Amino acid sequence: PARALDLPIANTTQAMRPALFPLVLVSVLSGVVDVDSSWLQRRGGWSVPARCNPYRQHFLRALGGCCGADPRVAASQMGKVLVSALTLPSSIDVMDYFYGPRTDIAAIFRSRSCVSVSKRGGKNLQRGDMVWQANASDPRPCLWGNMAPGKLVTIIAFLRALGVTHVVESGRMGGLSAFHYAQLGFNVTSVELLPVPGVERALRRAVPGMRFLNGDGVRLVPEAVDRILAQAPDARVAVILDGPKGSLAVSMARASLLSRGVSAVLFDDQAVSVRSWPLPLAYSSDPQLRAALPMERDAFAHAQQPGTMEYELPLYFPEKDVITLALGPAWKKGPSASGCRFEDTKC
Image 1 (spheres, rainbow, N blue to C red):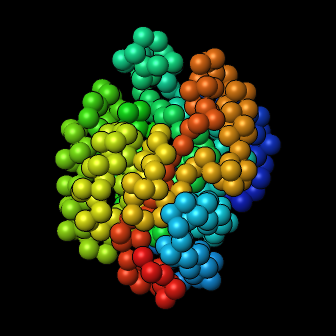
Image 2 (cartoon, helix red, strand yellow):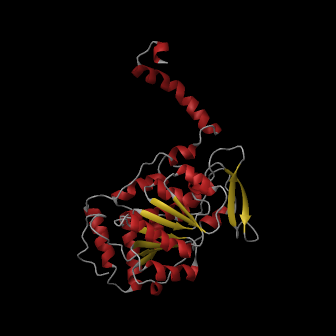
Image 3 (cartoon, rainbow, N blue to C red):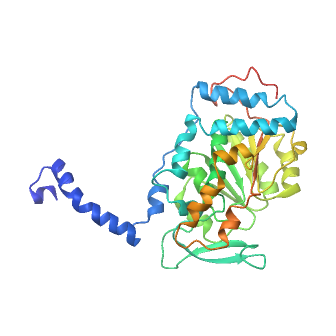
């Protein structure tokens, strides 16, 4: 085109920019350009820093200070420590990913190709699992999730501050949370008891390196952890349990994960008692975290998006919504993870 217009290439770009901008703007407004994919696909990988920095050293020392405290006191102190994780350099792009100027907040919950919904289980959409689908003629993948952005930020900031490299998520459902973890640099193993047709296929296209295991997480999660550590002994593994839930999740984690080299175990949709876990833990519903990442902000932003359904707000943003973030036995594993020292820790 530059030769045809007889213009230097550098000038061609400048000359065409005013004409291109209205075209791009009209395309976005008319839906020709898929806005959510443009920002979701722009992220590069993240790797654990090779050297310690004073911010992480302070965070890890504060985390270690929770080990010697009474469990109930430690849970309160852990809330403060997790708030400090939000300010670490490793959290800057996480905040930008979920709250930056280019973020399409609706796409945090489901890709725009998801247009029809049905229920799986329960008597209505509020109580049953929602299963979304794209139009048959739409080639774009349909992925969805039900975690508020603030909850995802808390999880990812916590795992990055610990230097986690691999995430085993049990409970894939709509696949969007697994996609977010992979986009922000984690190696992801996705486990699901009842796979939704199309979700695994869409994730395989979107994240070629993701590993998929279908079956009972009680058996598959410990096997996945063993496989990761056998292949990469220096890996730092976190397990996120969104199924099984309740006492079964806690029993499985105590029996099968405390004896393995995991750095963290996260229990979604439940507040695990401090008496049920031998290491410090915290809750995403902690008032200090709620103040730093107010759920009202997420709910308001989501409500402004076109196509939001009335039942979604109480489903995504209940006040009782919580995830338990618990340290695992290998939370301070090896200097290769961060180079930071743990001289003041006892657990």
